[in-house]
Amino acid sequence: IMFILAVCTLIGGCGGGSKPAPGDGIPDGGVVSSPFKDPNYADYYPGKWHSAADITAAVDTPVLAEARGQVERLILAGMHTAVIVKHRLMEPYQTASGPEQYVHVMYGAVDPSVTGGDVVDVGDQVGTVIFRADGSRLQLAVRIGEDITSAYPMQNLVGGQIPPADAYGLTDGWIDPIDFFATHAPDNNWPEP
Image 1 (tube, rainbow, N blue to C red):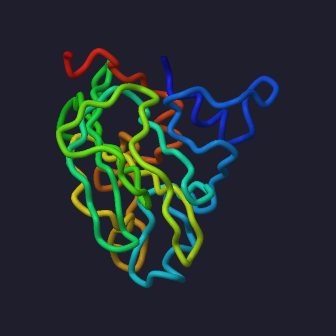
Image 2: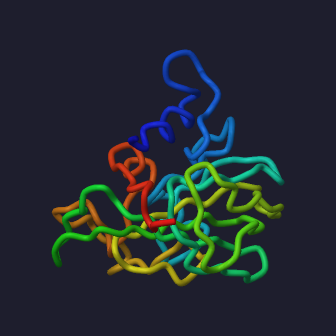
């Protein structure tokens, strides 16, 4: 199963606007309001770049797991909340330091419905979208190999600029979640039950 469903949902459904399938992780009817590496992000957060994609969603919208995985941690810091889930890929992702089999996904701006250590299956609810004064949304971020330890989807600019992607499409380990989910298959048999 490829993560192409996520992109189809974002553009209104591929092939006639069908209802999103469980496990696409994108709230029903959501659209990208702030893309990965949003060029306007530093206007609001000086010195920072956006390492997530913000997807519009109503308060209390269920957020579903992209794939089978294990909840690594919950981050609860006021309006900066997140569920971090470790997923395994069917095929390793090539990086400058070698192949990586695992990705960490941040489902941010959510009220968790899971706890650390839980195993989730594709389509399991990991939380619901919370109210935010600056607009309710799901913040979706992907980091290849390395863990995600903050619910703030922003990183420091380098020399006043967003760092360029390396030869493998990574920016400091981060990758566009929409593109990533459209092209990489999870291992939905991991971790073993």
